[in-house]
Image 1 (tube, rainbow, N blue to C red):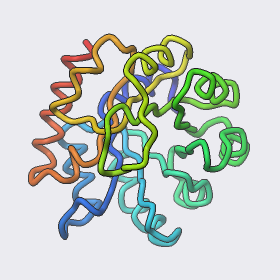
Image 2: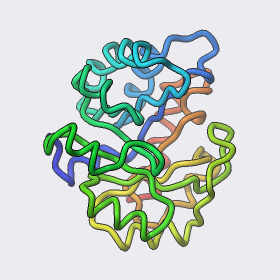
Image 3: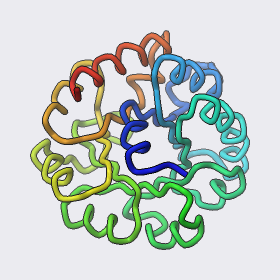
Image 4: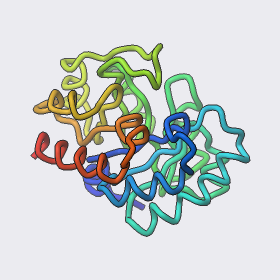
Length: 215
C-alpha cells in the first residue's frame, strides 16, 4: 500500500504504455528501459489487447515495477488488475465508476481517475480516487479525440483537490516546461517515451527535465 506522499513522489515521470510505438520491440523490454531511465510509475494501457493479452503483459511487467518500487496500474480493467495482483487501476469517466473500482479492489489498492474539470475532480476524490490524471493538456496523436484541458484549468484542479494530479496529453521535451507552477505531481508520457529509438535515454532526459520544472 502506498501513502499519498509516496504516490505523489512516484508520479514524477508516469509512463503510459502503447505498443503501436514500439516498432517490433517487446513491451516488457521497453518498460524495463523506461524504468532504468527514471520512469517511476507505469500504467498498462493497451486498448486493442484482449483481457488475456493484457494479463500476460501485466505478468511480465509487474515484477519489473515491483523491483524498482514503481507503482503499476492497469487501465480500465479491474478484473485483470485483480488477476495479476497489480497495484491498482486507472479509470476514465466512461469506464467503471471510481466507487465500483474501489469496492472491487479494496482499500489497499490504487485507483486513479481521469478528470477534465474541477467538478469531476472533486467528485472523483469524494468517490475514493487516490490520484487524478488530467488532460489532454496538449493535442496528442495517442488520443486525437481527447478533450483539451487548459493549463489554467489544470492548475485550478490541482488547487481544488488534496490528492496528487498527473498531467497527460502531448507532453514531451518541448512542452514539459509549461507545467511549472501548475501544482502537478508529475507528467504522464506515452509517445515521448515509447516511440524513442533509445527509451532509456529518453526517460533520463524527460525525468531530468520534469524534476527541474517541478523543483
